[in-house]
Image (cartoon, rainbow over all chains, first blue to last red; front, side, top):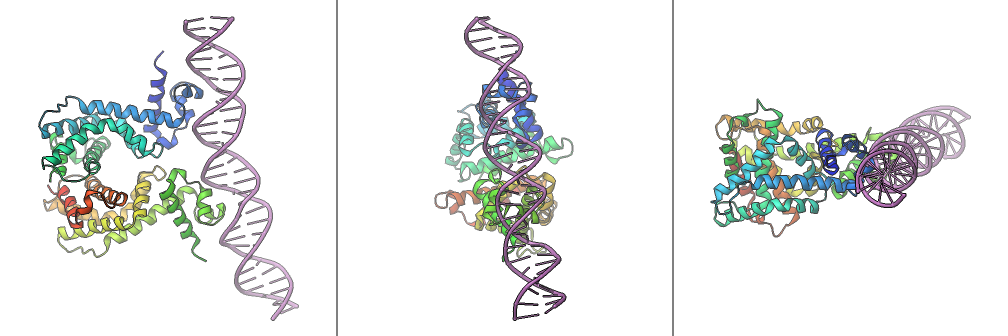
Length: 189
Length: 189
DNA sequence: AAAAGCAGAATGAACGTTCAGTCACCGCCT
DNA sequence: AGGCGGTGACTGAACGTTCATTCTGCTTTT
């Protein structure tokens, strides 16, 4: 038999993407996961736990994807293109993950502390890079959270638009390099 | 006696800002509004209606605030400073409205169509200005929704930081003009 | 045969909504 | 002026539903 825990996580993700977290009772999750309602509680203590586990899972995958081919010793611009480019390519290639992230990140079902905890792993490289950029006088002297919002928010929005209207939306014409360039320009002072 | 409908709206807003929408049962809203649970239903058909009415109210006030002193015939940059500056000043001066907006805009309790409908009034001037800027070759050729996300998202985030940490956060040193300048630079191609 | 895994009915709490009754107010009749 | 009846805003207990969680007993594994 397949890993039941993973099966439940996948079912939860599917359901949230399809119906939204607020319309995902445990009964429906268990139905989608092909298991009884009680079975879920063998693997997760509460619904909150389940959702948080999903969140952790999501950001672990994202962190791995972002770090791919990252070289700490490369020049700032190169490292930037790596991290931000990896992010963009990942959410573009995984619409469900993107949609899930959008839902969970703004959801009150996960408290801020838990969110920070889960995102922490991903943030270390990013924070480090941003501080580097500021120290070199290349980036604006603004809080990292702000710089992150602007750049990652832009990339997420672009990916979303591209996924919604694959043919018509104007960014389709931009190369990936140009889009990452836009983000770079937003940070540049 | 005071306007009961407004009293209920205010109570709802207070409760949402304080506890979050998902933790606002009608019973608590009515308690805060000093009325019986049934009274709410004299003014709003359902809870969804109540929340939507609050959303409408919120954006009507915001639209009025943003439009203040707007001159359609002024140069692009002047008009930009008016609209974006008004927005920034408004959310900075009204932390509760800002917090409420943040909650409602990402809430699944209001469907996208309703959100668009409520925001529509505010968008007309903004859309017009952005199209102008693109036509003049000053702004990037990107969807307005994207340009809005980047600029208004930045301003909201800045206001939020400033409200969270009034003393320590680095943007406190920036003048309002510099902050609006950052937004302008983000649009400039 | 013992243990563990599992299903799904049962449970009880929480919530949105309803509705029968109360109360304050106002115009009208005596 | 003072009682009377009608009106409708208002109340809050009660209702029915939904949902997370628990429990009981069945099935599979060891």
